[in-house]
Structure formats: structure tokens, C-alpha cells
Length: 246
Image 1: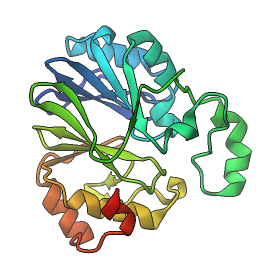
Image 2 (image 1 turned 30 degrees about the horizontal axis):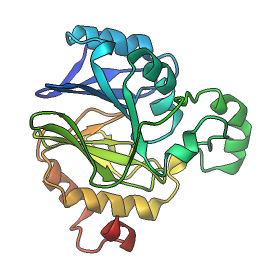
Image 3 (image 1 turned 90 degrees about the vertical axis):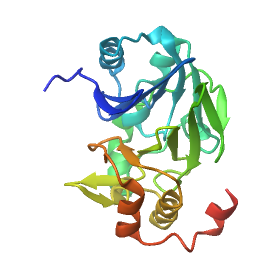
Image 4 (image 1 turned 120 degrees about the vertical axis):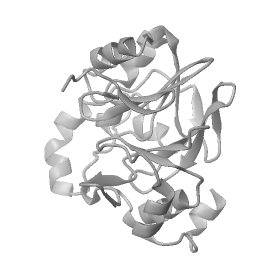
């Protein structure tokens, strides 16, 4: 396997294998969006992956974070500096990652969190600033009909978001879902803060008009995503009050 070879998802959408997680590249007529940045040391892999797509760091207009965990944000500050791109994340996520604070451990187990804290804190790479604080329903335009629609999918973390790439109808879910051995599942329990809220977020996804699912740690689902979600998790008839108003 060629580590730097981009993974085709849909027209103008590819994934790059970075350290710890995949980075999704969405190209529009007015620039490129990177969804997540991988763990520390991922800048070289992202640069090489973009080059394989005929793109450069200078063309990156947006860097959008699905959530603060270090396998997704570990190269954020460095990439923001090298690209000059605008950084965007959910309003509830920025306080967890802003410079000068102590970013929470991803682990729910208190003993594990305490033991790993000195190492984990070194893995975060916060940007100097965030350019746009996102809310559910916000849109990031990439030119023409190409855009990313923000879907707040909390549970894994308070500010976890998924991004609906249009017009391709690809939902980039970050860690809000797992897809092991071609079986959909809720996010990993050991690093998910609120399992009940995470399931509400899954039901929110079922209500979307989507065709494909794109994950951070698993192969993408090529087609029939909406029906697959419905079969696995049931009908989204009852949503939490949070999801109804968010």
C-alpha cells in the first residue's frame, strides 16, 4: 500500500492517510477544505497527499475540525501556520483546545486519563486563533454548488461535528460512528463522553439526505448510507430536546 496515495471518495473528495486518523480533502472552485489534521507529525503526509492530487498547501482555504482529540488536531497549529487557512470548529470545542488551557484527556477511565495526561497534553497542537466558531446548520462555501454543511453531532465530545459535503451528499462523520468489518456502530465507548447524546446524534444523521459515509478510522461506505443507518439504528422518530433545538 502506498501510504501517500489519496483515497478516492467522490468527485472532488479524497482522504489522506495521516498519523492516527484520516484527513478528508474537499475541493471546490474557490479553494480546498481539510477536515481534521491527523496526529502530530502529519504535515508531511498531508503535503504529499495534496501534491498527489495536484494541490498545494497554499490552496487550502479552510481547516475544519470535527473534534479536539489529538489524533484529529495534533497538526492543527502547524498546518494553520503553513497554509494561512481559516480555522473552523464548533463553538463548544474551541474552549477545550484554546491555547493556555489544559485540554481534557480523551479517555473516560479516570485512572488511564491520569496516567496518560503528561503524554497526551504534548500531542495537542492548538492554533493561535480560531477564525470561525461553528453552529449546527452553518455552511462553508467552496465556490459554486460546493459547500460543507455543519451538523452538530455531540456525544463523542461536546462540540463534535459532522460535515455534509454537497452536492455529493457525503457525510464526513469524524468519530461519531464506527464502521468495523462493514458493520456500523456508535462511537468508541472508551473515548465517548456521553453515549446517550451520541445516539441522539446518530438519529440526527438518519434524517439527512445522504448517500455516502466517510469515517476517520475506517473505509468509507460507498452508497446507501441513509438506509444502512436506518437498518442499524432504527427510525429517528424521537430525538432529544437538544437535537430538536440545535
